Image (cartoon, rainbow, N blue to C red):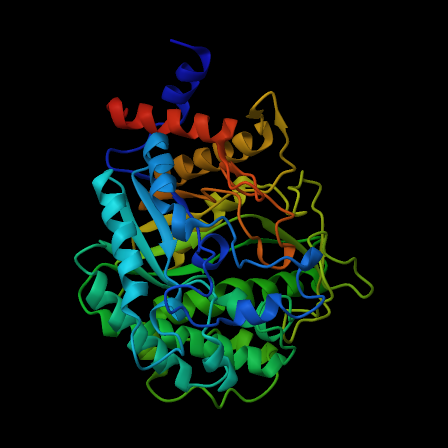
Length: 469
């Protein structure tokens, strides 16, 4: 037995049935943006707007997963993944966001999920990962309440078509990003800087989640939030208030609505406007019963409310405003921890913190870590990508998952972000998160060292009985 195998068996052993997966999103990998009846999304429009994407990149081809999905599933099988989390492109299913369904789009996802199941990989389907059909944006986008009802119709359509192919559905990926990066800072599509509309959009994304859960009925359904551990830079009143504010808008605004059926009063008080968009009965809909909570975790925020604070080390690559509506004065500091190529602090302890917090403060619900990963500056040397930093990151965060389980958290799985290098939103192709390296010119795939290591972790957990510890 090698030293690495000994360490793996003693330190990274998980309960029987623990899910080991990887995740992607449709717009970041599929390409084929004008094929087989797909409509235009807000990201297609955004990438064609000068100055919005680093180096003027777009995802017209991305990593061509639409044509190469069988080869990509074969890579997943080689890794030994037990599950794969992917998203469905709304404009591929409903080109205008409502009305007529594009059968060719549905057929693609049926072929994908059939291929996954043939290889023993459980498909986890996400309905929305930010690619709103452009015609719905032209009608006002997420600040328009009607879009939530369009989403419910879309959810029912996908569910009916895919219910025999998919075991677990989730609704909206990271509604914080869709609302506040899309409509407040303008860093993401559609690129609007309208703080009060961002708040409306956040509520309507929550409402869309609840309506979709209702529309899909009894099938296993989850909601997805991106959570951060929040630390005040000092114990000053200003910094403590900054931590409360950022925790409120990033974490509690979504968790409380989804799991408790209410918005935090202090968060509503922080926000501009009178919240007249919250209608009677909305929060009951948003609080629809869930089968699983999907938690995306990447980093910790260290924040300050002191005047003249520093800019965040993880600033947008292009000109953007603040996403922190009502708390634009808050600044983000480095807490003295190492950072990824995105400038994000590496802190696996924060993952234990957010998972145990949800288990402690909210009604009992099974959880999975649905995204976790890091970008680093990968280089191919002698036909290999020696990404020791990424391997260390994933190993540390899997250790955090194990610690959370031992602390009593009902954690059932882990999905690495991402399966492959891809189009990284406003960063274009400049940042690589993948376990698998992709040459964006040739589309050649190459497993990085982190992928080979992750495959061994999965193999040992599948072939040996876990210990009771």
